[in-house]
Image (cartoon, rainbow, N blue to C red; front, side):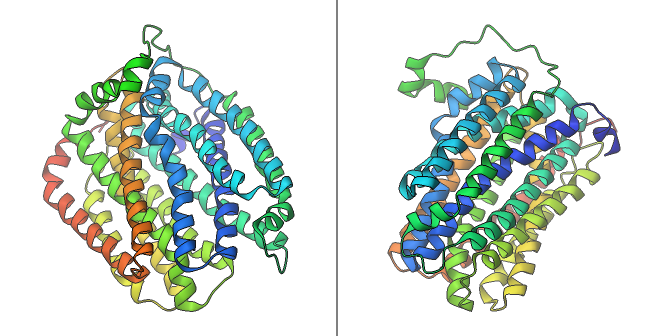
Length: 425
């Protein structure tokens, strides 16, 4: 791992990755915590699910243009453009806070996710372009760990700031937003620092200037079909995307259902505690990703995949029966730890086996299908709340899905091993 950090450009890249996740998370925490304070029961679950849905939609709607941008232009150029967009959006979000415009701020979550949709495939594509194939699993582990640490710290920091500035006795969302305007200034400052870091990145890439984007084909849906078909036919990419989609979809249901579940189970209303329990899963993912990175220094260790999937299923089986906040946090940590072991080799295999010149489209397809799956699971969460299906039942359902996922990858491990042991060993 020391070899990675000795490469010029690594620290600016990782800091930029950290700040991008940190900023995206900050605004989401403000909105989610406001919902948590002002709403209960079904309304709370539905609005929380909608917030997460707004974050997912740009990855679905913009699949083709995002993939084109990442293949047509240098990855650093795409990341710079996304970072400048984040600066403009955080300035707009801060103004919304000042004016107390809750529902406009709620909608700005979607626009902030648009810049993430362009940033994500460029970020992961840059790993392959800059570090080479032989370091894919190792660098992916580091990037995943940094992203999760950003989410972990962001969750705690923005929840603490939210509670610190939360106006006692607030009766309207506008009162809350106007009290936490300083959070907006933090978001703007972090966005500007991210821009500076991205401008310090080396650009080892010569983009393909011959690529063109057919708007008519895109609007008709034919471009989507043309981009998806050749990539989806590759078995290793298909298996990896399925695994990632199931993992992150389960996570979406947990995020939507857990706050209401914990509130009903323990009567806890402090957002710092609730978000800290959820953040324990982030700490687990960071540590699990670090372990996967170390184990996969010279190859992609595919044996971690079924092991991680089984750990997730066990954690979800235990969670609904817990009544202690500390045990819930421990359970979230174990689920995250197993998740880190599970997702790092899957991400690395997608990048390694992507065809030359189609890396951006392959990564965009991965995001696209994962986000469709997550949105579907969120819609099921909303439907379950409307039908008054208990949060405990929802957690049991995703436990069954994760167990099926684990058994699926245990059965597929021989096929996966054919693709995984790559590198310079």
